[in-house]
Image 1 (cartoon, rainbow, N blue to C red):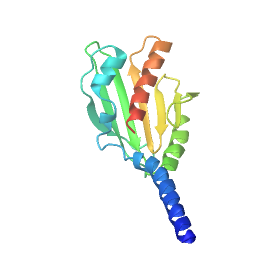
Image 2: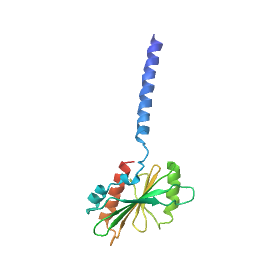
Image 3: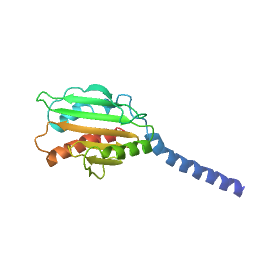
Image 4: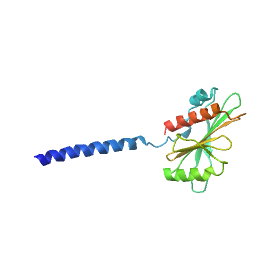
Length: 166
């Protein structure tokens, strides 16, 4: 009888541990089919302080042969500013990390950003590049007269909103 009670206790403990371990896996959902939905125009407008239209969507080219195409989302405002959001979903986190590292060499010396996704940096043109899991994305605001800490923070805020949906 004591062995049966121990067995039941271990079974309960094992079930509990497996349940706890499965919760993070359940949260790792696939990105949406419409990658532009990761950054709604209302949030772009609110964060940047001016009205932006819904994004104009198009296919982003493959960075290398045998890699995934992405999605370009271009948000235009009445004052002529444009926010360009480009996103790719790679087959795995390791593939995304490899591409992220290889592509960073083309954008001038990167300025790393801690605490944003799995990896993030500003490039020499002040565009923001972020990787979270198997998703890589790019946010570029233009035209910018001068790249201020306030603009830098706005771009980080937009990236954080995207990351929150992944």
